[in-house]
Length: 398
Length: 123
Ligand SMILES: Cc1ncc(COP(=O)(O)O)c(C=O)c1O
Image 1 (cartoon, rainbow over the protein chains, first blue to last red):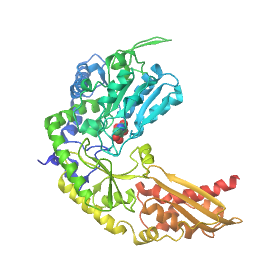
Image 2: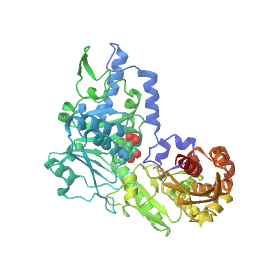
Image 3: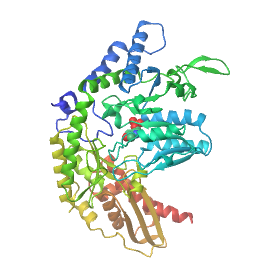
Image 4: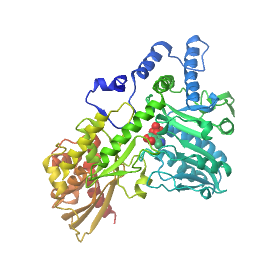
């Protein structure tokens, strides 16, 4: 099945080999059409104005909320808050829940493979409130080094990735969530990478909060999702103030709106949210069973090809167990930037750098890595061309 | 495959000024954190003039070749002349087209060199 034909960028750039999907995915025609359609037929502000067009736009916007709720397995659509991206979702929780519910010397538990967006908001909370931030170690397979003694009565919040954007590993969260809840701590899952590769059920997981970004899952930029348990969102103070998030405003006070509007101040990215539904529907039409099986096969193929290069070192899990299609590596004596530059000359896009994961890089003594990240629309031919280019890069420098 | 011009590759593979262990009077390090590039510049001065240059560090071919070629350019110049060096002069020295995404790599050593001299004048 040629899925690339669903994505117009591959028609406009037939030579393009796009292996940087973990940074952002390409967008299928159905998503691009949905955005155009919104602006051509529906454009209006939402939740305000007493005319039919505003009502239709509001309905479309709220339909996406329902779609997202179904997508992650909650029955309560008001547990879905739209943000700009995953980063904003984490900031919202750190600001609102963190400021209201955490005290000096309470502990926030993270891991050493978190993305900077799941570290810096907690370091900012540390600056504001004096909480302690501690990090779980990572083993060579990209799993958390964890036993329940790591969560103590001081631990009030745990915030962990559902899939590493550097190693591609999918850590086992269930024992950590159980241990956190046993001690009364709340847990946020950063599903920014996971959400496009694997079905998620927040009820089964029993996550308190979960975030992801539409742009990494074939949707538009500028839309993120924060899931939060109803009872938590209800007791949290608003994050940003303005229109939409209030019920009443007086000269000296205001009353906030109900959830989720309480957390959606100002005119949101209406077209983006409406369009996001098309992306989720697109994923649903293909189905995660198929997406996973294609991606697992491509990952295995890539791992085998890369392992066959004696001068190349894989970083992270070497097998397809408990991982998805993000693969980091280093090449003897060649800086990752030079690898990416060489591939770029062949129209192959990969990422090089620290991938917003400086703590892991420092811990493992890596200045940077090169990273291939695959989507189900990639092909074995893409991988072969990339591997061939890697061989050429090696020859060029040796 | 021909990623960079031959002069860049040559200076990257066989640098003249790398790790010379100068009895340096001035030393300054700069890092480009997002790429993981690090350059430390060591200088010997006589009065206002740079009389010897060395660098250490690691990074991509452009950052390392640029740091090495900067030794040719900087040796013999006065502090004032060095502080006036521009990015255009560095691009000219490299003799290749530098894309926006690589400009930080090309200019890291100039930053280290100029900041070394700025540090120095603060003491
Ligand atoms: C694991 C992880 N968390 C968070 C983010 C931040 O996503 P965004 O920039 O869309 O907020 C990313 C993006 O690279 C990521 O990979």
